[in-house]
Image (cartoon, rainbow, N blue to C red):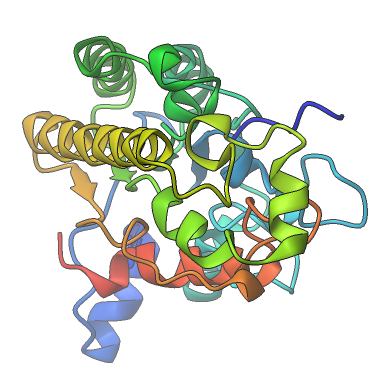
Length: 280
C-alpha cells in the first residue's frame, strides 16, 4: 500500500514427498520453470508484502513479509516451506513495491519469470482504491485487464509454477475499528488511504456514502481476483477471501500509520493464506 504523504501447503517436489511420507494432505507439487535447479518462490504486490512499517523505521522491510520473510519474527510462507524442505533456503525473492497498483503487476510478473520460481504469491489492489479520492479509484474493467495481462505473463513464462492470489484486506473494517481512536485518526490525517479514511470521525451521509463506495470497490476487485485465478486454471489458487476476512484489531497494525500490518499482522496474513489451510 502507499506511504503516507509525510514521508504452499504449497509443496514443491521435495516437500510433497515428505508430506506424503507423513500422511499429510499436501496437495499437488509445483515443478517451477523448466530448468529450475531447486525449489524457490517469489512475492508480488505492494507495501503489505514489502513489509512496510514492520521495522524500526518507516521503510520497506521484506524480512518481515508474510510471504518471503526470513526473520524469525514472522512465520512466513517461505519459512514454512523451508521447514518442510531445506533446499528452499535462500531461494525467495520479493518483488513487491510500496505504492504499486494493479497496473504495476505486469512488470513484477516479468521479474518473477526471470527469477524462475516454482511458487508465486500475489497480494495487490489496495492502492487502486487508496491512492486518492473516490473518483481516482481504478475502474473495475481496467483493474481486470491489468490483472489478466500479468497472470498471462506468469502462465507463459512459468507454466508449471503454482500461483497464490490473495484477497485485498478489509479497509472498511479498519475504519470501523479506528475512527474512535484519537491516535489512529491523527495518523490517518497525514494522508493514509484518504478515499476511505479521510474525515474519519465524520458521520455525515456524504462521508458514509464515500466509505461504502470504497468498500464496494474492494469487493468488486476481490471478485475479479477470484475469477481471474479460476480462469488461469489448476495452477492458480485463490485464498477464498481469507486475507479480506481477517478480523483485524488495532493490535495487528503499525502504530506509525494505523494502516499497514505490523509483525503480528504479517503473521496473521501468513497463517490465513498459507496453502496448507486450503486444498488446491
